View 1 (cartoon, rainbow, N blue to C red):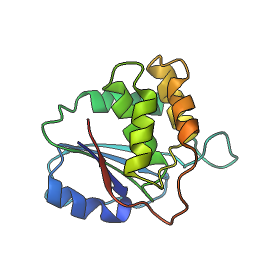
View 2 (view 1 turned 45 degrees about the vertical axis):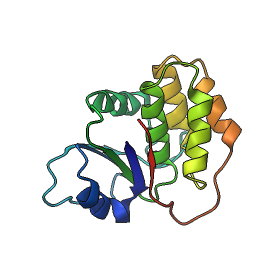
View 3 (view 1 turned 90 degrees about the vertical axis):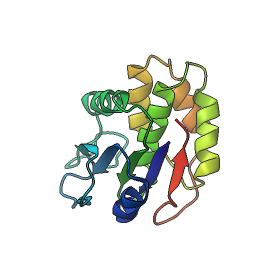
Length: 166
């Protein structure tokens, strides 16, 4: 299972579920949860939640998405994978969606995007991350189209924690 949450809930969720892998997605200068006592493998990716070039901000890029997917490929799903970002709305949902697509056969993109929307009404996956993952996985635009089809999620300050089957 892929657990997705806002950063302020990450330590409690990790303590409750004992994930084997943790992905922390944060702005370059943001503080991160420490996860005391957790022995999970951890990937920290620092970038801003923007969907394109923006002066003074660091957007996600192909190398970052490749690191994300490579790290997730080492997860065996015997224990949960925890993904968090500041609000649990954009970066973390894009990462969870990309990982779910990577673990599924081509053609499942729309089903996975619809499932993401059902599980998290506020999910608004970062469009640039999705497009980069779409290219890396050779999905020929289907991931981006599926996320565009579910539209922007409900307005919120931060999402509710949810889990996506793997």
